[in-house]
Length: 338
Image 1 (cartoon, rainbow, N blue to C red):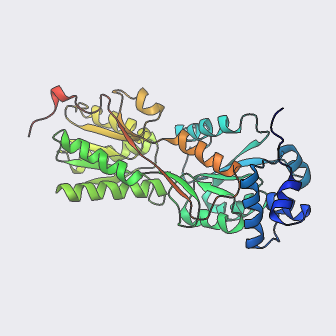
Image 2: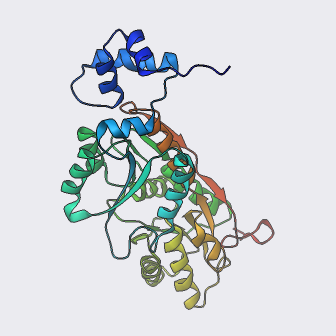
Image 3: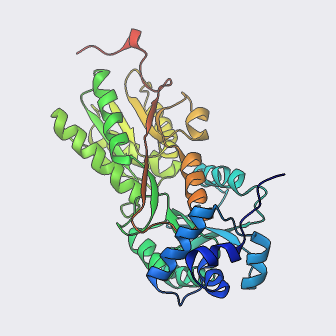
């Protein structure tokens, strides 16, 4: 015979509370004290209790769902529209939810109305929310209203997060270009208030400072057109640039087009390292050397945290960023001398 599955009555008995109290805590209904909640959660862990998702939905009167939130900040940014990042988020989420009887709700939130919309989503959250692209202040606002949340972008200290080493990834990209003999390494940065873009900017600035290189940079918007415009601007003002670190593969693809339009060659005249390792890196001509952002793995880890209960305040899990070499940087046999 198989092992008997623990019931909520068993949880209540071990925790020394009523069944109704155990049910309220497990369903994250307000009203229970911190110590009482701790006792119930300890009993859940001890017994290996797994709540019946259908019963929880009936008890709450709401369908259980994971909300995925991205704040839009420019033209063309939307779910499954022009940016491959979001489809990778979904690719990581969906296998974890398969068979769990939990819906997936997507929210593309305009920056102008983000505060009010964030409040509404938090008030109606069930399983919880994955913050796919959101500023730290809005993430904190959500966390104050609903603890069932995990960010997959850099965020404030209290908000649980699984995130990539964006600073280290950008630093490593510049180091790689320097190793290949490049000494005039420019950067195209992402939006000034995007948390990933901020960290990648910091990584670039630290690297060129440590390596004793001059800085040259322009701002893009995490889209192809922004990368194209920024590369044109850099080449006008600093025509001796021999490499670019570009904070997003889509921008890097646009930069390649701008560079080759001037008669320069990639990677011989200007080498490029992008960031993300998205489909844009593979489809670019030439294919892009890039820093792989493990989006699918991060989204899956965030979802598992939510399914396991209320994530601990300040929880952190960091994922490394990996260099993927392709044709936008020289091979060892054709590295530039000097």
